Image 1 (cartoon, one colour):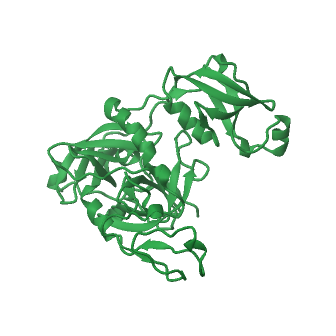
Image 2 (cartoon, helix red, strand yellow):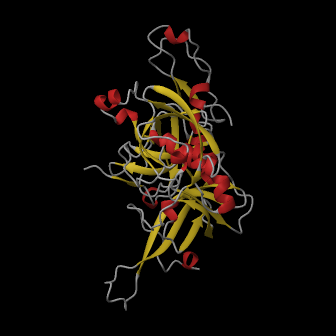
Image 3 (cartoon, one colour):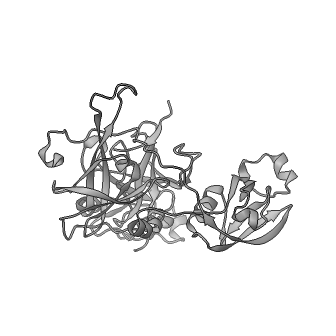
Length: 400
């Protein structure tokens, strides 16, 4: 049975440069016929072709990474009201629904990143630090479409923070480490590799209105890991663990790239929400078109997004974009798939004029479009499908 759900609850790329976190020792592969190099030293192009194969490097221990990151990883407890009483018989009490997730500290003053689905619908949020101190948490900003939330705690000073890395620098096969609270087992560490990049709605069928560009990892991720950090070998956060496929611990987990989080953080901290821009079209990936459709539209290759609908009176309509146009570049950036175009158009900025390159009937054409504000649907509360129980109601510290 296929299961897809949320798992509620600066430096160089270390795996390519060999620059490991201090104390994270490296060891040469036993299958290599070349002479072992110093720990952390990367093989040259010449040595890669000598003997039986290239020299491969792997961490001997993830302990230094886990030890340094652990004080910055927190447990997020939530309580919300779940009203399951009959519609015409509301005299009884509603039931308290408890949840548990993970977060990580990015500000010494108590700024914490987690998933939106971890705190969605919560009436009360309690954050537990690694030293088991607990603090009430308040939501500073949230964005359901990317499943990102920022929580703030007061009263704790000089907290240990995690550095944010560069998820664009990751390559498939790079080592990563996940830390979280699976099934309530606090501060559990698991390790694996980046299994794939760019996983979207087709691969992880969640909310179709969301913006997804997941990293896939085989580091064990389970219910309770949501909102926790995915780290590279430098101890930098490269992703936020968010979803699982196959019921958990199946080697298929998904994390939000940290560069996506970093792009939205300033807006969430300032405004508490994201105001998105819109192009005013409905699109489809060129690679999803049949050969007959491609030939009819004179489309070569499989890159780009074809316009299937133009919103009347919208930005694309005013700029004379047409159904059948293939968008291949947006604001100077190559458009490979529709998910990338959706992200670029939504984050460019309301009122901004951008250059859009389209291919129309086989001929390239540059058109300037002024973006409007995206009309957001009314928000709805969606509880995570996987949520381990939080503390009991008689927990004095939690109930304060």
